[in-house]
Length: 243
Image (cartoon, rainbow, N blue to C red; front, side, top):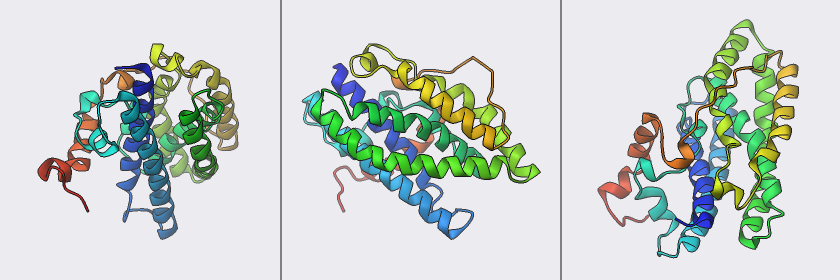
């Protein structure tokens, strides 16, 4: 695999898998407005995934389309962050996962918007406008739930403890990442966003330094296999099917 292909694949897979997770809330949101809002965020991410996977296919040069990359690969070939494949859990869990991702995604896209690679810069500039809205929304929910009732605060603490060890992978760069962007340079802004929001939400920032990695290298939890079984069912059962 070439670095340009692999890098676009990582971004496309991460957007695609998180979109699929958020789509699982459709029809199950706590209120109708939230049901629609989560579906809109999922669609934004799906649109971004299409752009990244299309570019990945072009960079690979083997003729694979966005659909082939999304629906005809097994779990070991996916390069998404481990964070986004985690199950939805309760609403505190879903919004904590989203906030950790959004606080990283926005500065990532804004930085890539200045990339010397024109195709990457164009996708990032378009996606960053959506990412800014996503971050405002998830930040608001972190504050509402963390500084809400005793029960919502307790659930936020549980979600943070479960998901925090998966955040380090966002900044763990290898040769593929480093050929395009300095991921470590994004950490101060992400950390500042987490600390200021958690302070408003009366939540503590974990001090645990142990972090889990592997998603970007194709080492996933069993949860991704279950997600892909549902997401890829139609294309696997009826190869080449189109609407």
